[in-house]
Image (cartoon, rainbow, N blue to C red):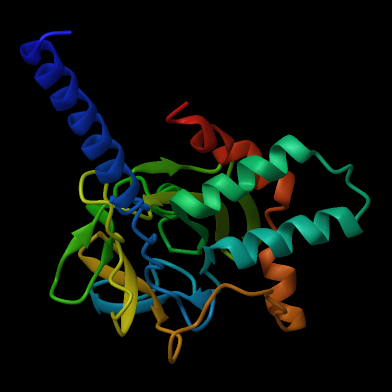
Length: 246
């Protein structure tokens, strides 16, 4: 082997050894920790009239439920206690939905004097805007809105009472930045309903400290309200969310 060939061989060996050494010393990249996002101090909250012409457009019986992992697990456990057969695939989809989306389950009631308007507003029809209001005035509109398939109707004296359960779906993380949609340091989050020259809202104050998801054990009245829409019915309405990016 002549000198030129030996030099080339040595250079190749050194380059290979340097490459191996560099590869071993390079730190392993790990994905960034997923932002926890905003955590409410209570999951169920009543409707409130903020301002506007018709304070009786919505009934005080209206309420909204914050569907996070805790509430979804509660629905699931109540379904099993009621004798529903477990569906592992549905349960897996439920975990994915709770991880990627915030769903607000809105139980809307109206006994407004104009029954045609009462019927419309329980389905958010005719409303000017429906959105999450964040500190600083930022509005976040739902990615999807699932209006209940039918409105319940009940006579109340000369009035008719209408009820409907609607689901509002918000992404937990921004598609581009990957950051939490809701600021974990926000003092509260509001869901605002604007329409008919009136403003109503549901508000979830933040939980104190730095809470983590844990099992939810609601009071009896809240437990009843939480399962008005059962686990299977809820999942049937939103299950496609678990496979949006498949």
